[in-house]
Image 1: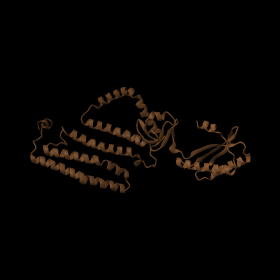
Image 2 (image 1 turned 90 degrees about the horizontal axis):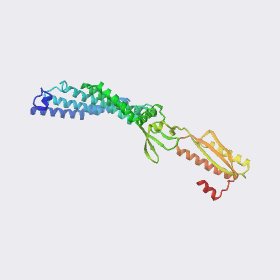
Image 3 (image 1 turned 180 degrees about the horizontal axis):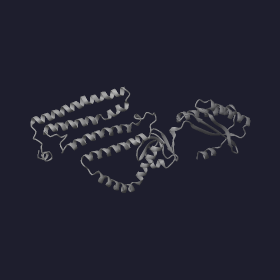
Image 4 (image 1 turned 135 degrees about the vertical axis):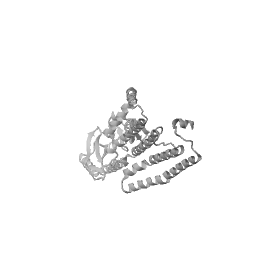
Length: 356
């Protein structure tokens, strides 16, 4: 009590009745927030979702904990007011502390909303495709909310913000020289966000094929890529923006190119007829593009002609591509057999040489 009186001179020694009343207030407040306030928020969220107001429903749902915690903090302060007979809400020694708690929970609710949409950015985006800028700036928003909350609470206590900001500025200049690489990655992340070359879920590959996989996450410093053989790889953003990057998910069609050889002894007419039939079979396939099909002899060797077969499949699915290619290869084999096209003969040394 001597310590409390040093802070609050007007405090009175509580009686057992005051203690029981304070405990009852806390118990009633906890029961109210657990079984009444929580239920009210749940009903309001369900009502908003039923009215197709999903954004408002999500905001209220994410503010749920902050509202209940703020309510319980107010109940505890009220019980202490009754217990010690000091107006904690207006007393000069405690009002800033109580106000700081309320402001903290207000900013905590906003932070929870931003955190939710950072994890599920499609929930706030009306487009089916996710905008990579959204999670990027939501993360920045979370940091700004924390800074704004800190400065707001500090202003209640007459903290010297000008001196603090000046010190931060000078320190920031010194730190910037020591973390140049990290800053390069951060600005690389900003470049990725502004250029929007890919989105979460896209399949990308670098020009040198050293990195290929699915984008799992994009943050300030690095991009998380799920590769087929190495698992999760954290790639610095500066690495991605400084080299060509292919977004394989944006392809609308895939090229299929195949070479095979026929002997020089085949007659020209038979070869032309066989190539025309191969072209026709490719054209008739359900999955092939009809506007660009190449079936020609493009080179010859001392013992054989080289035949180029090139066509496109209207898909980005590798399984569909391989299935169409398999169908065409079987068709080519049958056509060569029907037209009695002679294939070149190679000895064992030829195949060993080519395998190497």
